[in-house]
Image 1: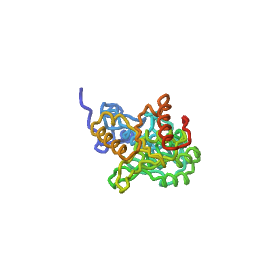
Image 2 (image 1 turned 30 degrees about the vertical axis):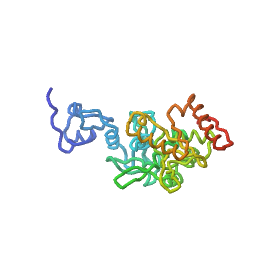
Image 3 (image 1 turned 60 degrees about the vertical axis):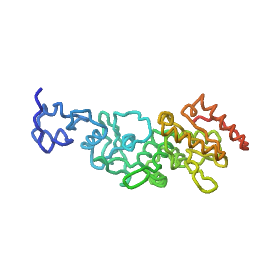
Image 4 (image 1 turned 180 degrees about the vertical axis):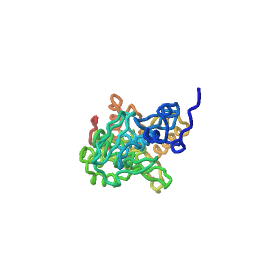
Length: 317
């Protein structure tokens, strides 16, 4: 099989439109060669492989009007929101008036007026900020629980080149919601902002917290160190029931399969026993019926032993 002829230097290193190629003397047959992908009509990508999601975003931006940006679920994918994406083929974009929302295969177009700081540039193209992407989804497709899960994910500090920082602070989410022109989903946004918490390490921890609070559990303390009488940290559990000597830790499969994590867990629960604190280990089956009923009964028993007079009751979200 013969090798495709070289492309002009201006086109050889990236993404270009069909119009650009034709204007530089590249014929239709050359554009059909195996080393060129066509992620969207009228856009070409120098690549013999299937384009990645980021490459497809870059390619689409080549044929959108000025001021457009990747948004909604597609922006959420760039920030790795902990969601099940409903349509991984399509790319969501927002264009400003007076342009019309694009109508292309595998493109979901949106049209709205935006404020300048609602989008940013990274990976070589413009896209919604983390705050904006959260609002876009909370106002259109997320349940309340999903909005809280994503909110917890955004405000958790993580290691970056600038130190430990969250993708967005809770204050930034509130400010973005107050300034937003689009008021769709305002109830979900408002309710989620009241329930988002910092220092949550995983979506399952969020799910556990929401389950317990809806069941009527006393107030929960999230990922706060528990100290002994000399001020030394005993443990830092996922959750602690305020006013009671009960902690809860969600344990994914890595707690079972990774030897180092398993040894850490053994030491941690030994320390809890020494401090006369009941440490409950939570697994995935505890969060859904039928396992949730036995799980709540166990917590009820511990609360009863420590003098609580209330009753827990499973309330699905």
